[in-house]
Length: 156
Image (cartoon, rainbow, N blue to C red; front, side, top):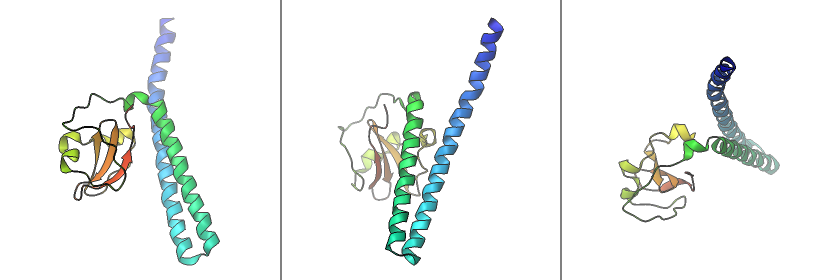
């Protein structure tokens, strides 16, 4: 009886990282699909007619939707990874939209998200950083203070 339980525990411990890795590969493939569809859209705009552009726009939209669905599924299956610790800030909560400029105190080093890879967030670009604002995560351009992308309700 103990042997079977031990074997089951060993099998479960080896399969869990494999499942997470498979989900990560799926998200990476989805990102690659989005890049390819955007490239096809650029080509259609350059050489195609209106129907080609419309079809390629639809393909880009579908690829993005598939990525969002896969990411939500990953997040749902790994809820413990998205549980946040207590967040204390000297300012009140405010909902930020994409494109809004925020003050430097909102993206100070103490609020930056250093482990964005664990959350399967895309790599920030040059002069960009992820910042925690209560249960939201903001992708901010540190040079201008502009919010590039707001992930509302990111932490459960």
